Length: 322
Image (cartoon, rainbow, N blue to C red; front, side, top):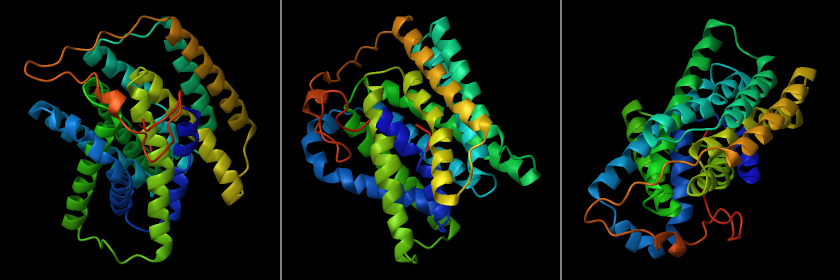
């Protein structure tokens, strides 16, 4: 989880460095991740063949919400600051918790809710010093907020689908769907697909490897073992990571409020984990639809992702936010 928390902090920095349209960045971010996974996909063919029409429809929906999240959030960075954009992403756990309650019947304990509130408050402190007040910045903040709603829906669909298939299969197909959606959007907008200097291609690859393979792919794996709300809490580390990277790369200083906010956020995260471990268990996974073969053996058959070598606690690949 710590690896993923660190990896996603690079996303806003890399997006800012790139001069390509954000949808082109998103397309190659997803395409390159898909291509990195493809050599390992042949071992998952039995699991892919067992997917039902309903599974494919839900996978398409998850891909749509992931593409929408990337498009809106990456676009927000053109209008507002990194800190202002990431402050909206800190609301992701609240949206995921609400959706998980309504769709998954997953109820958090009071201590976990209190810890979430403390962490969100700390993340707000980290980002609030740079919160945009201009009309343009407000538009960027609104885009980031809408992207947060989109990734929350993506995580709920992911949690439901990962009860029925290995995380590798889920990630491979969803990233493929997202690539196709971005390609269609870029074609409709008339954006160039290839006329970019080597520097941009390096940034596309870094976006695929760092925040996607070591971030989103890892989080998808974690979703098979943890609550959706717990995984979404990792996005709260992004303001801290982004602020530290901005200090190293752009010379932006950290204020006392940001340092205090970081400490508060981590304290809230610890409180949340303690409350989550002692809180009510998630609702039992629904039974497989009639005529569908059980997927119990799929996880055992799933290979380690190209993102991370197999390990007892954090092996292969596992939103949000960026």
